[in-house]
Amino acid sequence: MSTAMMQMAAVSGALVLGPVIVGVLVVGMLIGAFWLGDVIKSREPAPPRPEEQPHLPPGGAVRGIQENREPDEVPTDGRRRLPHEFGNLQTRPSESTDRPRWGKGTSGSFGGGGLGAH
Image 1 (cartoon, rainbow, N blue to C red):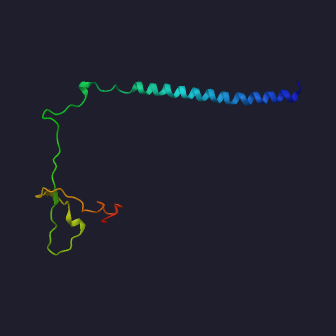
Image 2 (cartoon, rainbow, N blue to C red; image 1 turned 30 degrees about the vertical axis):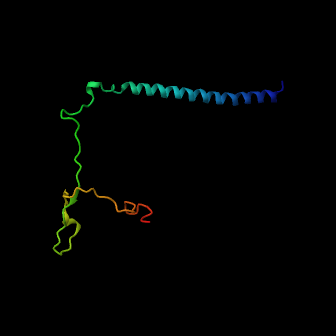
Image 3 (cartoon, rainbow, N blue to C red; image 1 turned 90 degrees about the horizontal axis):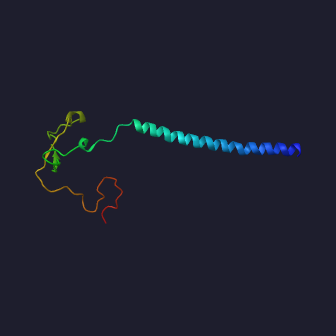
């Protein structure tokens, strides 16, 4: 065999050996990542037992109150008011039992992109 052919064989062997080494390193890193995940998971507390789960209160499920509310009126004494003068505006239960609805043919919100009335 000539020297040139031997040099080519050595170079091609190194080219084949490089990807094999990289592949073995990647597989080793993946195995290490799974092992580390298992170690971390084993340190976590166990899931709660059935008796540790939350239970309904003795009176049953708590339900929300559904009611219409309306804002307190702004004083109309003719004087201009600044935002800081309003303070914390409250609401009170509405005397009306009708649920508020959007106007027919509107999108339901300002700038909602609807087609509007047709």
